[in-house]
Length: 133
Image (cartoon, rainbow, N blue to C red; front, top):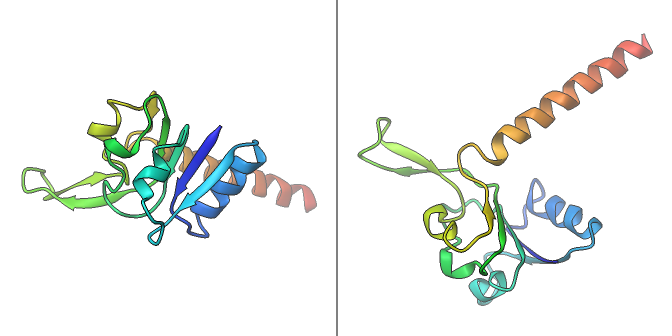
């Protein structure tokens, strides 16, 4: 599979790219200096958006049937929302869901899994510490 990671941070972008490569994906990293980023993303079977810009990845960027994983979480002003803002991802969800075969929502997609893995790692660490004592 061809995968594109939008974002090159040390925290998400680069580690995700490495994970995908270890699963034999052909990986391209798109960043703020990438020429014609939309065209690069449009060739991907898997898109991981972790760029930190609200709704940067548009429907037109997504190849029909691609899997989209939105790691971003951004607040945008929304006078109609109770708090005056709403949370959105790095992907324009409303548009992308029309062409993607699968897409993670924001909020509620990747975030809960991140918390679950952090808790699992904390428990595992505690068990290892207890075993050493």
